[in-house]
Image (tube, rainbow, N blue to C red; front, side, top):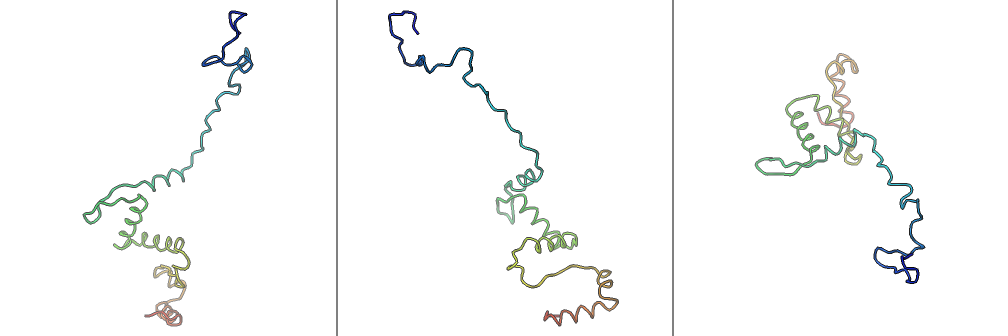
Length: 140
């Protein structure tokens, strides 16, 4: 309504129609802004985000962008090649677990020590393994 009863109320910028205004004592946002829902802490997601970060490294004099996970795998391979048996077993296990079955083929290797070979195959384990490999068609 306007101050002057004879003059009609003008609707325009900053002057909404009287019928569509908020009622007295009622908020324009009665339920309020919803509170932010905190995501639960997930260490796996954090680890994945860190492993997927890309950094620039120098490899053979050339700069390359690699993910941190790729760098970790490369370092693990280098350790295995240099004779770290723990790293070699880990790589063999990961290869068996993560390679596609068609890429894996029919051959499955297992790394065992001399003590385990003696326990499984007896004191003449070298001859027994040679017989098993010959029967399977593997070269000597």
